[in-house]
Image (cartoon, rainbow, N blue to C red; front, top):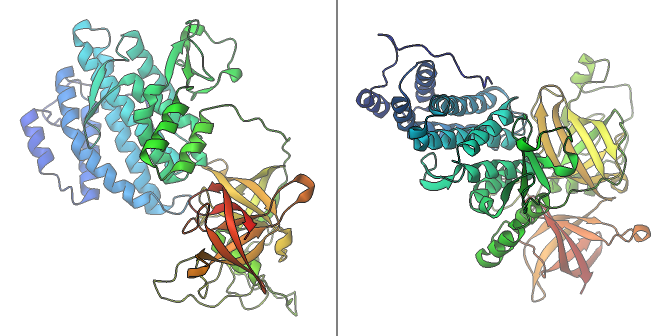
Length: 546
């Protein structure tokens, strides 16, 4: 993506008309129901307009007229690529790229306007609008990059920081501007939008699920006001984070600041008042995303300290993704070995004699398979993915270990296919085709990011070693209710004082529930005493016997 502003020239006879009446008619005639055609027309029009030297007032009016159509098209495009398997491929990748480029063209138009108006005292209100709109469209580029786990464009943070610096220098950062880029036009300030962008970056978005990132971004427009931006040397200049307005870097911990940086370019971000506002929100609104908001409170708080040194280990590892898949393989692994190890049934390996490239495979193979093929799933829509129904074959992916620490793994995916991995999913790491669940490493995907240099990268935080498949019924008044659900029992480790815990579906269990647990031939009733976490894909509970 090119963030440089285009050269402008005077309009000619064949230039795109920016006359308000003609442009309004042109926009009204757009076939918005045809997203592809509308995108093509709008994209071409904005590219031509941004290359024209036109009066500032005309440019502002033109861009404002484009706003509803651009919002309509980008909303339609997002539905085509959000929630898809990663890394994005083919049309899904194209839709994402088109969304980013369209936002960039709108941002470029407002940046040109800001450049033309900067320094003209009588144009301060229009300059505030231009800076505010440019920041909003750039924030959409950043948000979309985070939601599809790709690296944001180089130069993006330099542009964002520069726009805020212009607003600050012109005393416009606190001036309210009606935000027409939203479906419900509401007033906000340039500083509020800037702090919203800073706080989203500090929320570790590559560690959030797509919906959680969107939740954080939308919520921050209301919470950003609880944080403060200070200059270095101010009496109340307290805060854990700082941002260099002359850099192409996001905010970071002040402890990591470069001492050679000029104090005039530094702003200190104080987030201490935000935790109280979040707690109040949780208390009075009965928010359903308590776990997400609690994690965000931690992200905007103290710096985490790494306790172990990392070391690299380039080796393949198999990844089983999802509670249901892990349960099936832990419950019913193959006990028999193939009679003839010389037979290879995977054509991928025949084509790759080095055995170094990554692949993914399913367990339908009938000869030389690692795990037994389960029965086909029942078609009944009443049987959920976690219910005790006839399960389908589990999907197993081959990854490469890029980095290991005492607390987790960094894995790399270099296959041409898309992965099923998602932030918050439960995974089992299996080395050397070991079918013994007691030797599996269970973990949670905490971070995803895609770069062209490294491909798709996962950060997996390890849970407890070992895994035992169990079945669980929700129990009310001593009676089992509903279908039995798949679960995993993580054993107690007395040596390091880790209690036994249960991994269960997010619904219908909750803290205080009673459940009947079937462990082989044994059946016990337990009470779920404490929820350790809820990722949206599974919950982890401590429990006691009833």
